[in-house]
Length: 338
Ligand SMILES: NC(=O)c1ccc[n+]([C@@H]2O[C@H](COP(=O)([O-])OP(=O)(O)OC[C@H]3O[C@@H](n4cnc5c(N)ncnc54)[C@H](OP(=O)(O)O)[C@@H]3O)[C@@H](O)[C@H]2O)c1
Image (tube, helix red, strand yellow):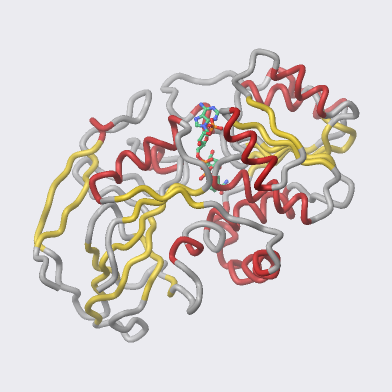
């Protein structure tokens, strides 16, 4: 380990409006030494997710907030370089909260060893919070079943593309994605196996959704909220399930956002709308991974990672989620194993 400097990105200012580079500040400190019961990890890959903007605010709805000057908190895969921890040996690859930095010390809390034969990219996408969110949300909250018609918003994103594929594998008769460009829509249909995709930026998106679901949709898996939630609520089938996974259209808004105008269709259609947070179910990770592994092995479930290079691009990787530049799970490749 020739390096002695630990490069870090710190929280410089809490986000107001659109997340931007001014929210981050580059810094450095000496590489820390692991104490008793700790290990030192070298960051290889970092995964980013939209909720991280919320954790940068003064109060976070469900997670610990960061203080100004803290290293930006994020999950990644590190290689253990030194260890005083009985469960982690030098050379192990570990998924844990490494943060936006080259090196981190951990006491093992929340850390999971990367299983042999599984890549860091897979651990940070399909075999991690992203894949489990898609699976749990679609199967257990959405209760998708054979013959269902399904709409997924944010469909070309990390969770969305997997949620749509899970619906197809479970026998949905039609899965339609909403995404923000013609290129993403083509990708969803031609490579990921969605039956159709609609660019939600088109002026006639409400008409296109209605035409795609002439008898209403059985499941709406929502990553976006706002206008697309309202459009979906206007097109529900009887006993539909509306899965509130995320609401990225509101995350950069500092003012209160109005609720969906069409919510009363939940009554007319005897439908259910339910939110969830996957951290409540992470103890079931092995079960979710077990369900998806055969689908990945036989090629029915593809997972897409969007990897950008370099420590210097860590803030940009997070910002890309809000500008719609990512396709699939956004990862940042920070370092090589030693
Ligand atoms: N409930 C849970 O436990 C849980 C767990 C993980 C994630 N989530 C939520 O699930 C959602 C998806 O997360 P992810 O990690 O898969 O992120 P993601 O979808 O990969 O990344 C964000 C994508 O959202 C779209 N987007 C950005 N701003 C938008 C806007 N204003 N309106 C509409 N679309 C916008 C962009 O795609 P386009 O080009 O299509 O606009 C962008 O590529 C997020 O809302 C996240 O907070 C929830």
